[in-house]
Image (cartoon, rainbow, N blue to C red; front, side, top):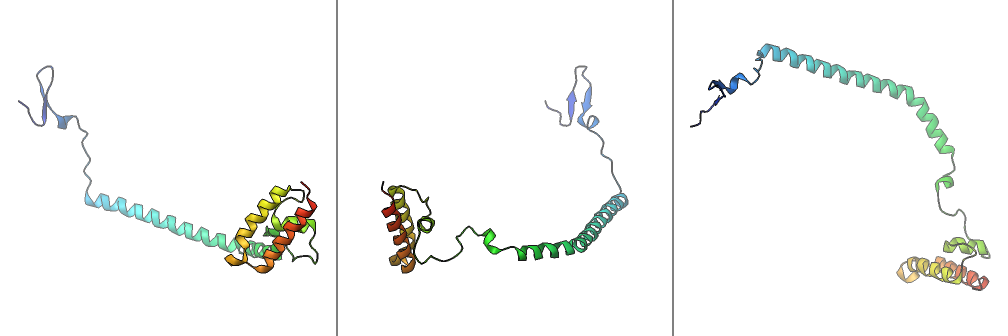
Length: 150
């Protein structure tokens, strides 16, 4: 036989669960409203303080931002580029040929051919590449093949 809400102890005393649960403090609506109002005021003051601090920071950093942007404008754009600056030489040199193929000037014939094939697949005129670039790539391969005897 089960008693709902009660429990039998060793001594046979009947004890209710309610005796062991902590009593909740009942708060009046006015007290809840006061606490909620205080929290809202604190949050509002925090947001206002953050806004004023941000405004002050922007006013303080504005001259520094102008100095930074002027410094960036003075820097050469080629400093950030990983590409070779300048056009092709009149007569292709070994250095320029190695730059075109993206290999070392002392690479083996196998590396020259592999680099030539990789670049020609990307720049072939039949696939939409430039005929001028394809001619320069072929010229670079021929020059490095001729100078490399391995």
